[in-house]
Image (cartoon, rainbow, N blue to C red; front, side, top):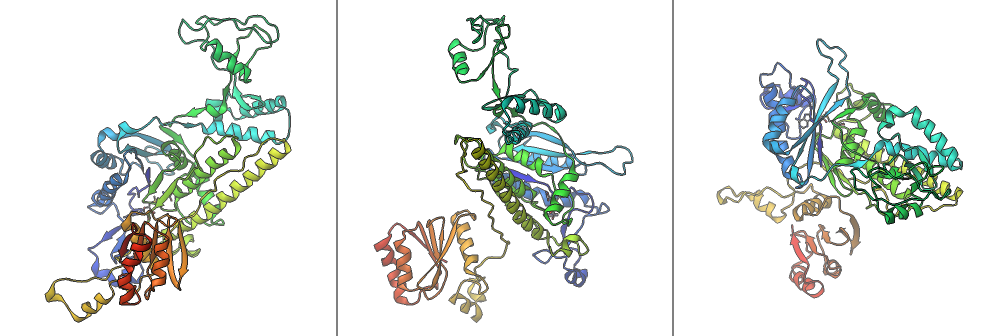
Length: 558
Ligand SMILES: C[S@@+](CC[C@H](N)C(=O)[O-])C[C@H]1O[C@@H](n2cnc3c(N)ncnc32)[C@H](O)[C@@H]1O
């Protein structure tokens, strides 16, 4: 899944390269307003004759790449408001195909403080699939149902009996009815949890099953529905014997099969209400009360769409990352899934391992901003720090929840399942850079002495072994999030990637001992530096060593 929240082109939120302002170079360089390539970044005021063109030129190529990056069943969500929504729709129709337009969400977050005509209170999220026909039904466990389950867990802590818990739960549901509207009928409690007794026992059409059901206390038959029962006699008694049937006091009430709250699902609705003030406060709380980012997207909405669209091992990309709300949402959702796994005493769920990729232009923060005063020089710095802080907080909350559940289980003498899987909040930060390799020009006429010298080592002198490692990982298609272990063999730094799938050493003066030790580990790939071997004899024996210990290893030199 891809989610993006590009600048809306409000006249001051969009920075773009301005190649026409070279005369102001000195000032611009001095004030640090250059991008990584040394080009000036400027705002896009409405007076600019290319106002929409500049914005579209920025977004169009990015969306083209986004389409390529999506998996066949991938989906993209794009936030936008009235400024560019009609243009965005057109380029999306062109890039993704109008037939892959899934729909638009209308999100009521903002209030226009100074409306002249219409008080615009909403913005949009467009949704396109790479292939709409490959989409499954989008369905999720109901968030309101989860709230009821959480409250039920809380009530259970007091050790009250089921009747008392049920009374308290009903009172609470009634008080919060507007919020819980869709699931307010899940208000019965038994020893297994919360359920609804209002399911229909009647077959939807005439011709249902006709048999007598005798009430367990009075022994008399309960009234049959006109259309007959909706289940067979065998199925009914299987439910009944498992305590899954709600009986009336006597035979005058029809029995119902209990509908467990865990089965309550929800579909994605096109109108979403969200009070954005909560989001801003949550972010500033995370940063010790400092307001480091204007208008972050609501965490709950991003979490909601990620929940609908992805499965537990999907990758979520956001290439207008800003304060990294998307990363926060992904970690939070993984944690919530894990917490549910811990409560359930069966292991139905696959472990949540969703990953995120955030991309952010190193846009400088305003010199007078709170962010800059707090030491965040670029928006990347803010996003990075948020992922760190949010991850830590989420992990602590999960630990707290686990501890509480454990205590509860001990108190109630019931089973507690320790989560088998740990929450992974780790992440790596990369900066886009030029190639690690020296620039060598091959035209003989251009060959200068210094270039000949360059050939002695083909790698730029300022590059670290880690720089080389990640380049090789990209070249070989090994994901950048793979596990990396670092060891030393004969004094040389050796990387083992993805549990020994690739072993690499970028040091120089490598001896036969290092080569042999690496070969003995039998990696799929073994990577060295071209100029890395200590002597010609190591170079000569290199192939022989691998032929002896690991002939199948693919050997690469940089
Ligand atoms: C609306 S913000 C994203 C906010 C994010 N969704 C959040 O919740 O924090 C848009 C981002 O686009 C970036 N941006 C602005 N102009 C850009 C450009 N020309 N190319 C790439 N990114 C740009 C800004 O740095 C900003 O981080």
